[in-house]
Length: 423
Image (cartoon, rainbow, N blue to C red; front, side):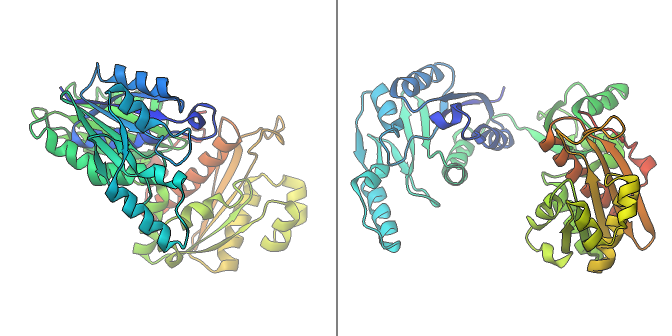
């Protein structure tokens, strides 16, 4: 049985919708790789009784608790007081953390204030965990055989202290915990139910293999895990890859822009894009990868029809007759991007992201994606479900995946492709 950990995240902004809480996702993934399990994530406001009670009850269930947030300079940052109060301890200034804070302010040419100094306080008898990317240190507190980690709330600071101090401590704390072997597949163009149906028909996976899914629009991470006495997890993942065919785009945790960029660089190919409904999102994804200038030359955001005519040379009569959302317009966009920016590949995309603009003949979610190269132009039609953001996300991913398949020489029959991905 895997050892378990609980997470308590503090912050009223996490409960009123102003901020998205992603700490559980990050912590859970790290713990899983170490052979631990995150069994609960409790979010509470910046309130002394709420934080204290959440920690009190968590310690009745687990031996390790991670608390995030409430270490800042303002009066609503009360996590140290809440933890100290539960154990009858005080909160005091940590000399090393205060000196580090003062040096930081000196480098910035600023005078330190009493409010800023609050960030150097830690719970009595806690071990300060220096913050490599921020101000407030983390803390490790041992009480009655239990361990409480207190980490800053900002994601970069949370992750930095987690990776530098917390994970190594956990790794050393239980060296004899059961080993967990893992493998994963990154899948594009299928939903969880589609993948489960494929697996069920094949009687897959074996009973001693645990399968988990992590979904995003157009992309699923499928993870397989086995215990020390189970079979070869790499062989299980390989069989899953065979079943899913060309929909598998990677066997490690990365996204399509990473894979496409690597393939373009390896093959010495270049790409340009012409985007309408995605508004530059394909270019943004591609250029999020360092070194993308080696293969991505640029793009044209042709949102309005007159821009499609002026910048891409698409005949106004074609747009008038076929509509801007049509396979011919998508094909011309891809071809024009390739010709005008002088690249090996051109991607063109046009569609109706919604929620307005749809008609019975061309409903919201209708998208045409075209890929042009020296051999000609391929166009695919999709009908995506969901809101505007989801339609755009699916569109970007499927455009990148269309190029990925071309670069890998995957035939449509090898990918049992779906033209209408799940809503």
